[in-house]
Length: 270
Image (cartoon, helix red, strand yellow):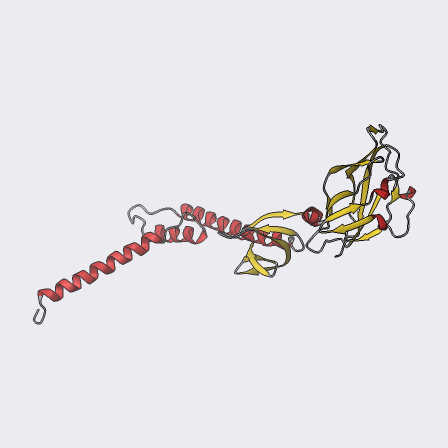
């Protein structure tokens, strides 16, 4: 014991105590609420290593536990394979991704890749885990918000006090925009000289309605977007003659009955 004093012993014991406390802390933070095949195998090995020599478990019990382990592993592999196969079917689909603590991303799945046995989706040039997928949409349903549309409204035209009608148009977005629109009323196309588009508002000259008898009519709008969107039941025109309005509601003729007139398309590009 020569050369060893109490201060050396004290320091060594303190360091040892610190090391033990750190080790205990690490063990406490490694816990998991999930019991996978790795944890199952560790429990089985621990059970084999620590069984009672005077009362060992029988071979049948071990075989049963090994069978359970094998079944667990196969189910885990099957679930992974099924999830990856399902991910491949998402290519070309419109999806919504919700990464943790981030705003949702909406876009089309360009491709799927498997990394470390897990599927990742490429959306808008970025890669996201399939676990962050929250919604898959039909292609046409997904683009409905991008197609041209018309606000629902009623326009009043009075033969005794004619005035222009203003119609709010949404020309679409995200590559589904329209660059022109054709307008028809009572089966006849309105000449482009009576139409003027600016800042999302289509103005229709009163000249377009001067030959209409009193009554109620629906304006039909035909856009040149990629899907050829048509809107025929949103804007109603009530034609008056003073205080009188007709009761008849003319029916919109079939497409084949319409007679196309020249210069009916209004350019919506500013």
